[in-house]
Length: 287
Image (cartoon, rainbow, N blue to C red):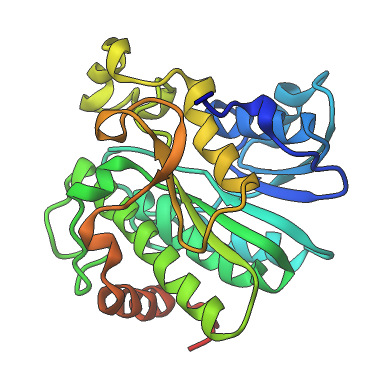
């Protein structure tokens, strides 16, 4: 069986894609390939000038807008300024295993970037979405643990890697609960998960886990890592599908339909997490 590649993308002419954190790495590759396939790609990024330089000269239609998903004011401003349909929303922006820090809203920076900000953004833009929301997660979500009493790391001793794992598990649970709500509402919009496996990007540069990037036989290069995002964004997959590499452990390989960790399939935890998160970010979301 021939492995799926970006050349297998369908014609996306006339479709609008919003992708966060698309100024570099997997996000930039994903944006480039979607635009090549004909989509209008809106890059929501912290450094708009840098992103414009990154896409300058690339074929396709790009629209670069300022968005810091860790800043709830920025998230609300982006959503408030939006008009028209969004065919595909890709929550790609993320950080990994960073030191303890708080956002301007007083939230844990890593959790806010990877989960709470995208949670708010998705809820604020959901009425515009016509096809699907793609959430970028990590195989490390399988080691994550959710503490509903301290989701924002206020009482526990902060651990960067544990916070990362928990945030990526929260993303998986968010997709589960979002899909339940969409289905119950009779919506055709899908919530889909994408894991790039272990991709050799700058994401882990500040982390102890950066050592894994030296073992190329265990990892995907960025071009291949981005395939999971592209597949999740373009192929006919079921709601709450989990797309990841087809190799051993989901670390590397070509995109395929896989299964998240057991904790990411807990509907009770997913519902409780939704309520806690909505309270944390002050989101006006459907119950």
